[in-house]
Length: 425
Ligand SMILES: Cc1ncc(COP(=O)(O)O)c(C=O)c1O
Image 1 (cartoon, rainbow, N blue to C red):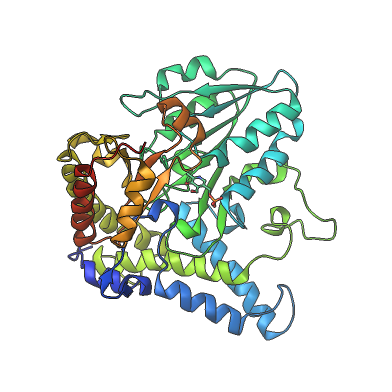
Image 2 (tube, rainbow, N blue to C red):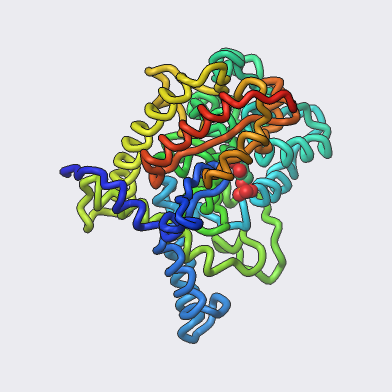
């Protein structure tokens, strides 16, 4: 394997939206944690599916066979993306929130009053609210793994006290959508496994930045959303094979008991699955073009090389961005910043500027065609733990399609915003 130099312009050319400008003003898309730009091949694959495979699955005729093939390909591609042991461990859904809600119903069926579950405070509410509701319905006690508000890491030393013989489920997040911390989910899962608890990992914010290996993590469920990794609005859930037969699905009676139908009620979005396959192929292409992968290597190997190349580039931009943020007087960053911590975070940065409301600042950025968000992004417990007020924080995120120019002009715009004093808080 020989690695090739990263060519940011060639990568950006793979995303049609990056060529758009508004009366000559370029766009900088720093809203990636809320949803990334879409790779051109995703748009083509989606269109192709709607032209060539517009039929329901399971028929004898050509378009239905094409739809079947497309579903098989998409499940296989997600299995490779996540390191699952086979496509039968993958189900698709509309989004991660609804997948987690439906699995909370399925998993909680046999919970009994007095059982316990452990939730983690950094999560997006998609991996909290479904379990809270199920726990309330079943009379199950909820325990929490807290994080340290200085180090922005979980208090892993509390795990042994929190997890016990009555623990039925431990739900945690891989990377935080607010702080960017990549959590040591393997440690959490190991503690959960000791007592036979089921583990549900929200991987929505890690999957767009790194190679996931659900088998190495050892989790039972792992959720990811394709629109966060350069694809269409769709989500996929990994379910460990041993669980599949044990769980009672929520399904209509005539539908097949085979995977994926067993846990995929209703007609799927064929076009979104075709687009998801293409998004995964985009990362494999990065592996071939810039990561030294042999085009004939397995999809998993090409993805490994793709992520290695993309994350090295993201790390460079992370350094540039963090160094720039450090020069802005009074800026308060919520997240890891140390030189030796940059590999423990994804490129998602939440911060406030002194005496400026986050909403005002993102509106000023928007005037300069720099796209970002203000708020707390459904990281409900984390925002509460950190005492983030109702105005929220500014959140900007980088992806492998972000340019140095995007980073530099954003830093300039933030420095200008910090200089503008405002007492309209
Ligand atoms: C960490 C995390 N989990 C879950 C979700 C919800 O994903 P979806 O929109 O697919 O339901 C998000 C969306 O922002 C997220 O960032």
